[in-house]
Image 1 (tube, rainbow, N blue to C red):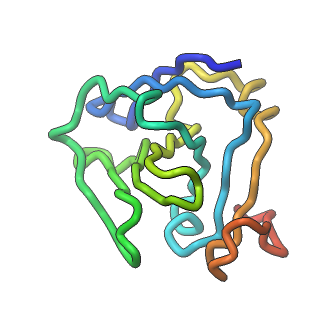
Image 2: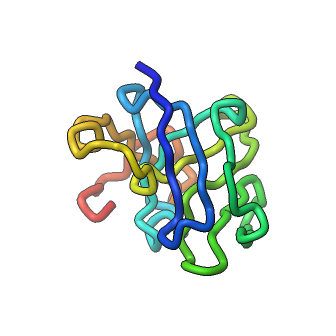
Length: 134
């Protein structure tokens, strides 16, 4: 069931709301940036995401295909969400860092299904052979 979650970066300058059904699944990837940041996200459509404050605090990092905007708070460095447009996954999206949801319960996090993606080998719809480090 979809639920409105409130989220933020560590210092609280970037705040957002997102309508997410964690039971629909979350994702972890082994590409270079996701591995280094231990990213764990839930994908939502842009109309299910509202940036409440902190647009001016966001810095942008892009690499490779520039299909994703990796946004992070310039004060605390936390990347609470990113956005992009990838036709293979349904077009425009926002990837919400589930560990930045302020009102998510431990039960919701521990029971949320995780789909693993092998981004390191550009094999996005298959899990990598090893996932324990993700």
